[in-house]
Length: 294
Ligand code: HBI
Ligand code: FE
Image: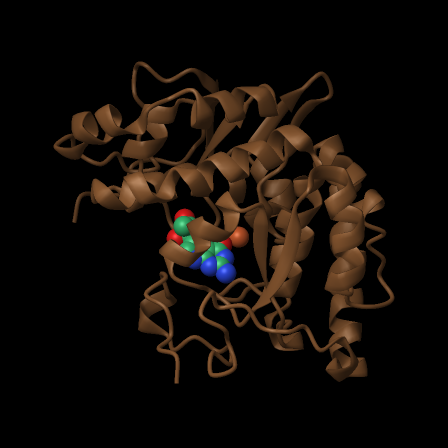
């Protein structure tokens, strides 16, 4: 039995996927014929609901990606079909995984332009919240943007940065970059703020909240600030980082040698997500306040 990965799990929850059939790189086959009518219907419910929201809230590159990959409400995507279209767009492909996988394998897949997608889909009772990334989160949230060459190149650079982060004991710092961009990033456009983070795109409640609510802070993308800032995994974010382009995101992750940054940040205190700094490029100051020191 392959041990469930050391990847982050929520409160020590046992990961739900079946890791016994996984290969050494944690890949598993997507047996599309095994999905039940109920599972296709859960996909349809999630897809239809989120498409309505993201038509106005998502970055245009996300919508273009879903279109290019032929994503549709009727059935769960076949990874083999998606891969033919994705490979043509950016040379990326997706593989099935049982769920969260260890950082080392995760980084290695991204560096090889492979994105791991959970092969299971959530229960109907989890439409609004679940603790692990399921097929809907991974596909609808992450895969669409891999059709954008600049964002795809950033994702590959992120994976390539993994081993050095591990060598510096700085994986948590690098994980913050992923969290505040790939999972919960916002893009400033001429039509206002738009969503590109997968954690928002796949979340019914957080999509509008992230760009319209007065509660959270929204500040300009700042790599060092991101790497110092903690985040919440169990509620809507209190803080969003905003990029002006995917090129900006790419250059933050590609032109920068992170080693000196890790050394510099190692001994600096972590910043709470509710906390604003005088040096922040504030786009919207939220109503959220630092939680009372415990
Ligand atoms: N595994 N399948 C999967 N998907 C993720 O998004 C993922 C992971 N393992 C680790 C991980 N993300 C994060 O720790 C990254 O920041 C590395
Ligand atoms: Fe994710």
